[in-house]
Image (cartoon, rainbow, N blue to C red; front, side, top):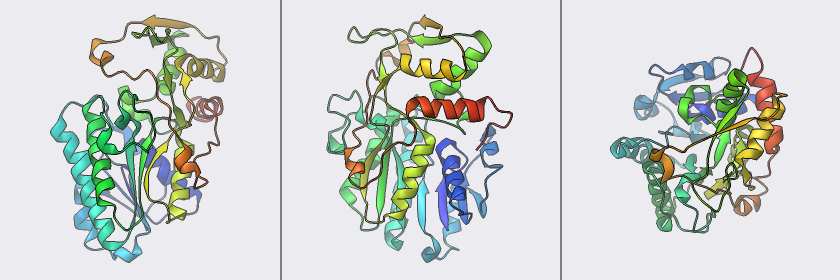
Length: 321
C-alpha cells in the first residue's frame, strides 16, 4: 500500500496518476476538499480509499505498518503568500514531524515535499550542500518548510527519508490553485481571452523587464523522479527537484504563445508592493546531488513540457490526467 497525502492537490493527484501508470492502485489518498474543485483531480484515478487528513493517524492504528510500501507526503499549505504562521506551522511542520516519527518507528519509506523557497534570495546558492540551519527564506511559507528540513537533518532517521525541494512546478491538475497556479496556466487563459500576456516589470536594475529567471520543471518529471526514489531505498537526504537550468519569463512566454500558435504580445505591469520585498529574481536548482543517483534528468525541456501541457490538456475538452 502507498499512502499519498495531499492526494487531491496538484502534485499529489499527479503522483496518484503516476502510480496508476505503473499498475499500482492500492493507494490510500489523504486530503481534504472543503469547497475546492480539486476533487475533480481524482475522478479518473484508481485508489483503495480516501480519508480526511485529520483522520490519518487514527486510521493508521488499524493498518499493519508492514503493508505500507511508502508514505509520500505532499499535503501542506502551498500558498506562498500565507501569513498565518501558526497555521503554517501546524500544517507544514507539526503534521510532517508526526508522519516522520511514524515512518521511523515502523521503518517505512518517507518521501516529503520541501520547497525551493527555503533558499530565500539565493545569495548562498541553490545547493543542498548548504545546511538548512544556514538558509534564510523570504516569507513565512519558506520558513515553515526550512524548519522541517532542519528537523530532518538533525534527526537523521534510519529509515529511508527524502525531502524534495520543488522549484517552479507546472502542469496538469493545478487548475484549482487560483492565484498560486503556474504562469503557464494563468497565461494560457489570459492569452485565450485577450491575445496578450501581462508580465511584471523588473524592480532590479540587474534584470531587464521579462528577464527575471526561474527554474521551471514539468510535473511529469517530478512524479517520475519520485517513483525512482521509491525504487531505490538506499537514497536518503534532501534533494533539489528542478530542471537545473534557469529560464527567463520571456522564454516561458514564447513557449506558451508558440504552443497556442499565437504571436507573442506582452503588456508590462507594475509589481505589487506586497511582493516586491520577497520577489526572487533568479532561481536555479543545483541538480548534481540527485544526479549522482541517476535521477534528475528531465524528460521534458521547458518547451516540450509547456507544449504537452497546453496541447494535450488545456486545449482539450478533458483537461485532467
